[in-house]
Length: 210
Ligand code: B1M
Image (cartoon, rainbow, N blue to C red; front, side, top):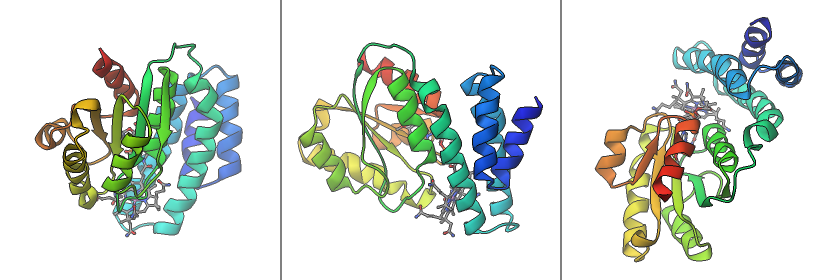
């Protein structure tokens, strides 16, 4: 669809206002929010990631593309969370210590809201102590950690250990996800759930409640 390839191109170029216009236009053309994500925003970000990896572009370009992505997601937000679902539970989410990537985490939060979860978003670079404190402050059903950098994966295990030491492990289910995270890794560190993408994460979160 031309509007989606134009959107992917605009994201790749980091053209924030064009991303906003094209995201809105795709909605007007009745493209589903999921289609806009996959074939528009994600497609553009995939190219950005590949070009960054190959050294063709640098951090500032990626940052500008990320800002454009945030702008597109904000337009999609009401469409992703408007489900009329009944309150499902409380979900604490954050990106682990050392990691500042938040686009995927934000998307997971939106999908969870769409499933009726109350989401408490701790933001990025969240230490194990802050996760533990959040569990003390809120009665949460699930705690979710996101990581995009391989080097920050050990903080997921560290956080689970800190939750165990605090005597809170039996009170909460733990989910993990993000680029380098796999089901095998989730099992290895003793997480209860994993989601390869935001939609699956929200489905799996609901399943964990039953
Ligand atoms: Co960075 N970065 N980055 N980056 N960046 C990656 C992740 C990288 C793969 C790029 C590459 O080399 N190809 C690479 C990591 C390599 C690795 O360790 N395996 C990398 C690197 C190295 C870095 C820096 C170290 C670069 C540097 O400084 N030299 C640096 C680190 C900064 C830090 O965090 N301390 C850095 C910085 C940045 C920016 C700030 C410029 C920017 C982030 C902006 C922001 O998030 N606000 C950025 C970006 C944008 C990327 C890429 C291009 C795109 C990430 C993204 O948003 N994808 C990325 C390359 C890539 O992924 N192709 C890259 C879209 C998003 C929707 O997908 O986040 O995977 P994702 O989320 C998915 C799933 O993973 C899942 O659902 C989401 C939606 O489907 N999911 C969960 C995520 N969390 C979940 C939690 C769950 C369940 C599912 O349960 C709780």
